[in-house]
Length: 151
Length: 151
Image (cartoon, rainbow over all chains, first blue to last red; front, side, top):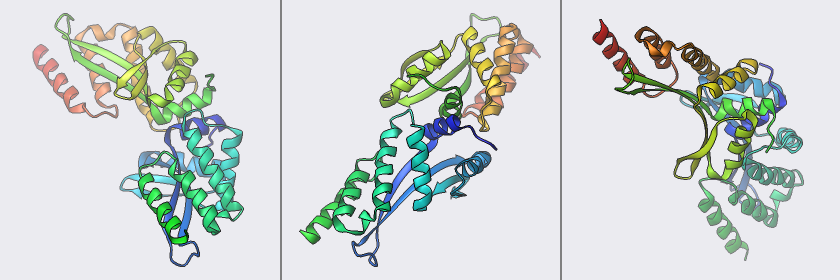
């Protein structure tokens, strides 16, 4: 399936998700791993559209999300930079654009290695907590823990 | 907000809904009213996008859907013909296309006045029941009632 540029922007405005996971990881100096992820989830009946996105962006994977839901997912930093460049050139039209901008900032900071020290990590977590997500409370807790530990 | 054609197709692939309501209406000869409707629902934060759609299609209304959700809605038959022509020219890429095709068929039948007699109404209800919706059981019940009444 060949998808048009603006179709991809419109579809992602509706169905796309820019997410930054922050996971406890004892082997990392800061204690936390930053996992930015771009994904589009669809019922299996529309798996062809997900393969269309993979083909369009020339990166990412298509895999089961949960039950009869599948996802197109991009996690590699190099590939997330491709995704970020695309949506900087072709801006989203909904308020998801604001989430995307925070996401793109985090991707850029990671590319600069700023997630590897405590100050950079704090900035990333603060930015992620301002994104439209269900678990901001968790991030605020992590942030408090980080600041206490190093205070 | 000026929206691009393919953006609109992509966004409707994600967020649009083609729906055909069948309501009991004692003043209509067949006993039932057919109410096709095209709608896009968004959180109030994206109401500007809904006004963008209204401007794009040059028809329809933007109104409260429920709580903090708003909708762009098209109900007038003449305007639904405009919507149908657009998506015939610019096909949806997800399986929502199949729903749209059934919807467009019903709009065409109504334009021909076929919903005004029992046989046409049955065809419309049969087609609506095959659309991706939560209340197909209700339509099958209505259909059974219609067939019994006139049997």
